[in-house]
Image (tube, rainbow, N blue to C red):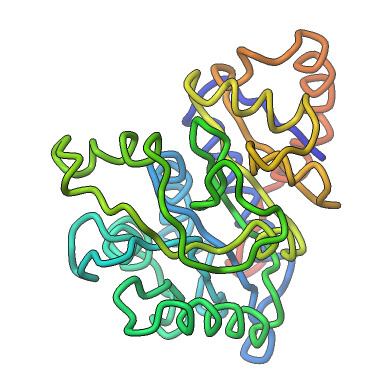
Amino acid sequence: MRLVILDNYDLASEWAAKYICNRIIQFKPGQDRYFTLGLPTGSTPLGCYKKLIEFHKNGHLSFKYVKTFNMDEYVGLPRNHPESYHSYMWNNFFKHIDIDPNNAHILDGNAADLQAECDAFEKKIKEAGGIDLFVGGIGPDGHIAFNEPGSSLVSRTRLKTLAMDTILANAKYFDGDLSKVPTMALTVGVGTVMDAREVMILITGAHKAFALYKAIEEGVNHMWTVSAFQQHPRTIFVCDEDATLELRVKTVKYFKGLMHVHNKLVDPLYSMKEGN
């Protein structure tokens, strides 16, 4: 496990974007070789998406041969609703890059048969050859995707009832009106993300500090589903200083002492431009 600690949110977002950029370019994607990327929603990844868009617009990065799979989607919210994750992804990322819409996979929370939709999503991931890099964020209660506390750590894509903490956290996106917040969602399982060849979790802000502590300093526990990634052979936690407030001083010192090694993963920043 790697823990990458940056001074602030903007630097953490930039580091994560550079890492994604380098992984895609080093993979050398092409017509018969797509890079498969798992993606999150929420406020945390916005800075990372902005940087990736910048790399694309500067000609350094193309998503032409990238397939994406999103972590989750609300149930019963119209696809074109401004707070649906379809809208989020297209407005904040997809419409600004050169990805083929057929290669951007998002669960359909309005499907007639929700379990069949979940099973088909797992099948599509398998047919794509599995996920090369799954990027995720977490909630203050340590949930990854919508795998709320108590979720099975070997779970697959399924229908989930949202915890009250999650509904309260999401109310800000629905004018603070709890009655408007969806109470159910389709989500990839912890096991689905664990199957990825590599996982990168973005954790920023003091309100996520206790969750980061539970994720890396205590044992694996289904009440803090992000802790499962202690068991993944290739996990990177990318955080800012505020998110480390609950960690032991020696833990922070240890991982900061490795930053010269971690920074070699993003420096130099590769480019798809000729001669770079």
